[in-house]
Length: 279
Length: 279
DNA sequence: TGCGGCGATACCCGAGCGATATCGATCTGG
DNA sequence: CCAGATCGATATCGCTCGGGTATCGCCGCA
Image 1 (cartoon, chains in turn yellow, orange, brown, blue):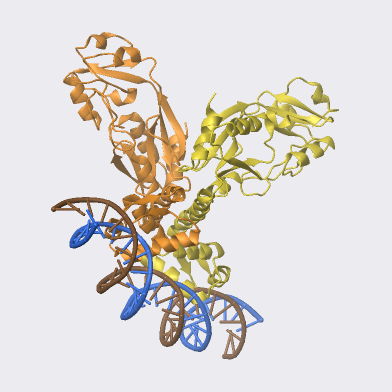
Image 2 (cartoon, protein in one colour):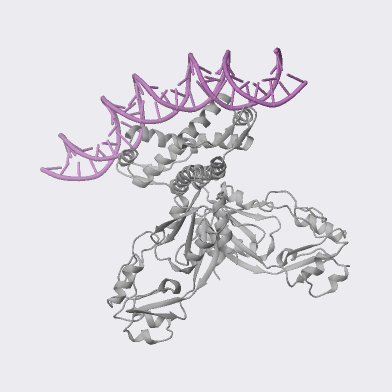
């Protein structure tokens, strides 16, 4: 099996249309048909069921689509990482959600910078749930994830620390004067529905609350009395004056982990992980 | 980058000798040289430092070797899994160390077999530390690992259960009458050095104890009074009459986890994991 | 029933892959 | 210090194979 064949197959499997796939690949349709047929013959398996009106994946085709996507991104990752490893000035890309400020990150970067032979650390600020893709296609070398929100599927991780969550409320709200609350107190406020974050696929779950993408948006909407949210304690470190944070006793704890692709060979990654986990 | 190029590069990087690599690949040496040069030009990076007497990896070459190996095994895994997904009779390969008998496995297999639409489960008995390779190159679909002995690097896992460890001793040994011992009691017996298991690389660590590969060997050597060992409680379930097991209070607990490759699409894998983790 | 959409087939051309022959550099033994 | 051996690079050739255009055959639809 060659990469070219996989690229072609993935294109067809995603478009479910030979013509469109050929266009996307920048080739004509006949060689595409031929390549897929040849791939099927090599594997000894039908990958697509095709009539002249409809193209569908077979069971085997579905498996190959999943595996193929992973392989293709592994290949682009390998190219990127190889090029980067050759750069005169070694550097390290650390992916973090734009919310993740916090002492932890500062301390980590300072501690690593103090190491002998430390590489330049570039911060790659990303949207929620993007870390995994960034690590898997080689755009980032390491990431900070927040369990259980982010999924560490297929990554190696080390736990850095665990914290509780707080409810963020308008300072004037009755609950804001409490020293602690429970999830039920926060989720049952009819006038303040819980904000919705995008899911792993990038789309929002159904619900009444406002749709938000980052903390600035969230805080503004809370200050306006339109929504509320339960977030990790450290994310509420420097809150606006018109907001209040109240610990939520029974909210699931949030664990910050450092994650990296399983076969990373970069010395800088190993160093950073060592610095992050020692103490 | 094409698979062919990667295969060639990995061969040269492993042999560090163009002639030998060409032989291993079953081609002549000139096209191999040419392909590597072309790969280096495409990546814009030297991968190998070559004089006429010596071939060595560059920094970038080392990175590409690690990534390339992973990609190559992912490709063979994709081929195997695609073919298997097309088989008329769906089956599932579960990799377990030959020691892992125990109730857990029996219960798991029974529970899964009772599911509607259960696939045939083939057991693949393997040596220590082989699970990961088997999963990564598609010879197995799921595995049972024992942390902290086996490493779940690059795999997704769910914890099944945790147990203590016991010291296995000749029944006639003085310690065998104790109801519990400590690590120090067992490791400091001059006449009974602790047995050595192969490490992740397949080679044995240095030390005085006997080299063993499986429980039968181990038990025989213990019965002969040549060695002793600390093993998970469940592995000592049906012990020979001339052996005794004593709980070791301060031995690290052993966690059995079920592990699978991160982007598995097989329904049977999902079912098995669901069955394994529910209760 | 004729038309349009879509994948498969037929056929041709050029790039690229592999083989052989040979060169040039470097290490080794006498 | 030189002759031979070793080993990677280069030159050149033939052929496979990947890509293009033209066209067919099938099927849904008006």
